[in-house]
Amino acid sequence: MLSEQWKKLVDEADFAFQPIVNIYTGKLYAVEALIRNYEGAGFIGIDCIFDNAYSEKVLYHIDILLREKAIHKFSLFPFAKSIKLFYNLDNRITMMPDFKPGYTCSLLQDYSMEPSNICFELSEKHQLGGFPGVDKLVLSLYKQQGYKMAIDDFGVGFSGLQMLFNADPNFLKIDRFFIDGIHKSKKKKLFVSSIVQIAQAMGIFTIAEGVECEEEYIECKRLGCNMVQGFFVQRPTQNVWEILPAYEILKEISQNEKRNSGRINNIEKYLQKIPPVSVDSNIDTVFELLRANKHTNFVPVITKDESPLGIIRDTDIKSYIYSTYGKALLYNLTQGSLQKIISHCARADINDPVDKILKIYAFDDDNDGILITKDEHYVGYLSSKVLLDIINEKNIVDAKDQNPLTGLSGNRIINEFVSTRMESNEKVMMAYFDFDNFKPFNDYYGFRKGDRAITLFADILKSSVGFDDCLVGHVGGDDFFLGWEVKEGDSFEKFYAIIEDITIRFANDIKSFYCENGISSGFILAKNRAGEIQKFPLMTVSVAVICSGFGHKHSIDDNSLNEIFGILKKGAKNSPNHITCIDLGVIKQQHSGL
Image 1 (spheres, rainbow, N blue to C red):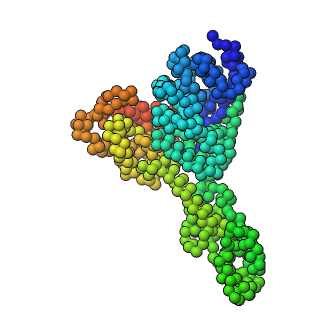
Image 2: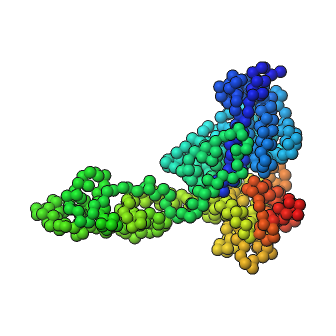
Image 3: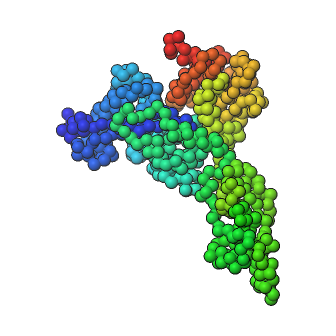
């Protein structure tokens, strides 16, 4: 029997929802359920609720009652079946005496929902060091039933990497600590960059938590996060009708970024606003500016219309000042104009792309920076140190856009390709490749040979398609991507033949990586996920192919697209030629009952 306090909590508690959206398109992917109205039952915080429930051994009972309320309210969303519900799960429920799996499945049936609609979040906060294996037990129990899994608050505890290693989650939520002010902190950028890189290599989607401003959003997007959640998108709301299917502000920012692609982001923050002098000023004005700005060693010189002419260095005038008659000579030289002591300095426009600015700087050996103009007017100076920082950031972005093992385009470029083509309604073909029996091969022969198998497949992809016609991508691990923008005269059969040839070539070439016994028998003996020895056939590759625009126009959201690819992948592994295809237009036609 529950105490009156617990009954009051269950009766009065409500849930607010906060959107989790695609960082590229702004489309709603999921909502996180956040418990509210618990204060009336005498609890001072959410952690207090679950800690007390754990100590009183009613944690599972309370969680089930609250879970039912969250799922019921989630079902009220008009688009509930096409998005996911992220629900915080306390790892400790499996230690309760009344715990038994399977209740949520029957509950979802009442609302005509699938387990894939639910994502359970596990947090580092509930460390179970004294109970080894509990985290893994929770994950395996729920993943076997078809639920998605996420690690919440990643990076704030000590067990995060171990949890990530054991969990094999679908999502990784990067804690707000690392996101807060990330655009101002090189250290936070480094940490998030590393987290994203690890996640990408493992095929895990990353969610930036607690994004509160545009600058944080842009930095998270630049570093390769897949999704975003926070006040910048929308605050948690208890009114389900306030949650939108798409958030136009993110789409607008992405479109502006594309228009400004190649430019230095927020160039204003890099500019040194060194006061200039007019070319017809006297030399005393130059002296005053150099004295007033002790950290600069030059003064920019501009014309009457504020166009930059060059700079006057302090070293150029020192040679006059320290000689016997130099100062008098300097005054004579600058009588009426400073023209004769001006040194050349490279210049660029504030709207020039970063590559152009860097080239200008590289070809100007005599200077330590560049004068920046806007509409031909001087606005500031980029020093060599700042330019080196920009080069470093550009190298990081370029590296993020490529998989470090294969050099192929990474997740950010792949995601932008998919989201852009889904918006355009143009003809497109996309193929996701996934190795069959890669894990036992990797376990049996070692990760070095596993990496060689991955680079072998990357080489097959590169030699099979033209980079001008196709995006060749490496999602991470043994997952690859091809994306074609279909041109006039191209046919489905042309692309299908290329995909089929890739699967055949890989199946043949990979045989040389096996020992003689493996080749002759057609299998190796290795442990399965349950730790039992079993036979595994030689590696092949399965392909899920989606085409669009060949028939009816499509209208598929991101969630549905991911689900379709997941279903196709499973089908491909059971197909004789390891390929399954579908036309999005046909899906829409069948769904509409046409």
